[in-house]
Amino acid sequence: MAAFHCPNCGFRVDPGSLGPGAPLTCPSCSVSVVVPSIPGTTAGTTSASASPPPPPPPPPPAEPAPGPANFSPSWTSVSSVGAVGAIPPGQPVPKCSRLVYILLAVFLGQFGIHNFVAGHQARGVLQLALSLIGYVLAFCTLGVSVILPLAMHVWAIVEIVTVTHDDRGVRMN
Image 1 (tube, rainbow, N blue to C red):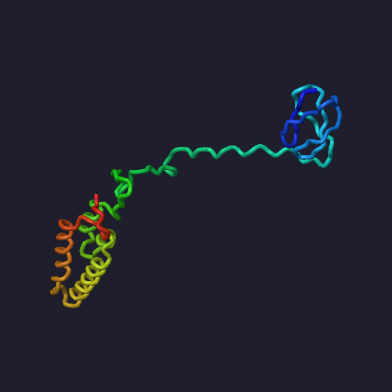
Image 2: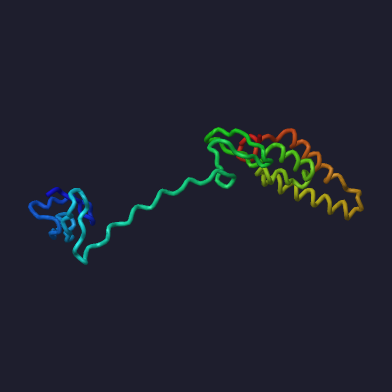
């Protein structure tokens, strides 16, 4: 008689001189099996205590569909204005782009908002405090003391020309 495979563990069992339909115990898992009638097939079990074969392994997870939610390129980054700039691996990304810094300095420069965005917190707090003090003085003196708010505008214009790096020293692109 030809050897067959145990339905429980898959071990190759040699029935020896036993004929088809004869009960046999698998030497690997000790489950009682019946010798099959057709050589090369899998035997049937006769024991009620035999456990069912293990379920097939789950399929591998599907690859995520390409799209904006799953898009993370390895060495490009999107700047805050939406333009894609090439950033080599290992180089830090600037906190804001140069264009955003300039626009904030032009429109909100006297309040130091551009410095907060670029990470220069101390400069931003100083500009905000001085401009608020200047506006309070200008209101109290009926507009006579407008020197401090004008000085904040000049300070912002100077920073537009001179500041090219954020607080970590990373060049704004």
